[in-house]
Image 1: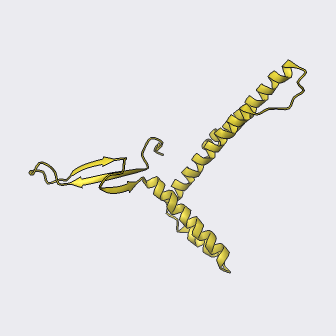
Image 2: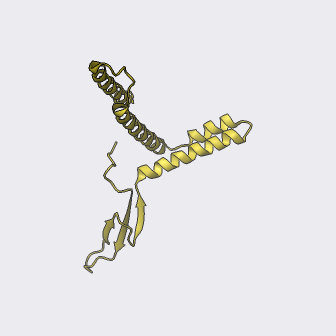
Image 3: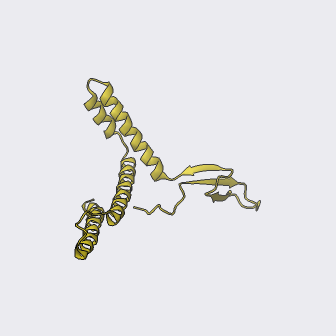
Length: 146
């Protein structure tokens, strides 16, 4: 899987006649800022939308037809593999982000432990850290399973 975190979601490509009249190939340049030219969107983003559209269509069919289950399954079977993979990758990224946020919240949450003992307060930090570590382990566990 390619890391797309630093890649722009859209680019505009401009194809112009080459400034050198002896060149037959066009002069091409691209920009991530909107400019003249043709807009291109990253394929993984388009594929996510395609897979999501198939899933939505399948759910509409499921709720609209007497034989909704069969129609839903047929629609889902038509989803292109690259679109399905892109949607699964997006879902994985969203899940990992949510788990990281949950781990950060676990580290900062207040645990109710009897305040009379300092050792119990130190224990609370340890419990917070353990909970956060277990949440983060869900990320690596899912990656190992996938």
